[in-house]
Length: 153
Image (tube, rainbow, N blue to C red; front, side, top):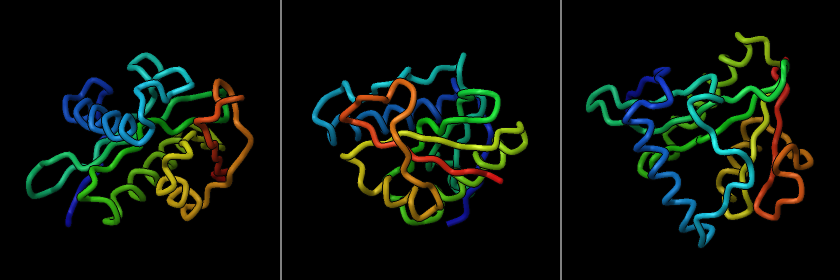
């Protein structure tokens, strides 16, 4: 499959549809719609938003975002790939593009939060060089959170 990663506004309709699909999947996994302990991402606090698109059909395949936490650190938000495109390299492509965007902005560290009902995500981040860290920020004390970090230097 050939695909392209594009930077788009947070309000992009394809990105919104991908985020709705992600939320529906997470609602099923966690058995509730209350599974985000941190501040939800929004146009006002997202610095980079990427959408992966099938080159042939134009169909959106996945999305990912970065939110700046401090002058040296960004957080991955709304990393999602449609089920039929998982294992195709789209997730790795999105993650690498986010890391490159972070480097370009002078951010040396990327962090993220996932959860225990997402063992596939945990395996993916570990395979991609992320190390599990103590819960940070709004995730401290959350039973629904597992946090990771990768130094970009």
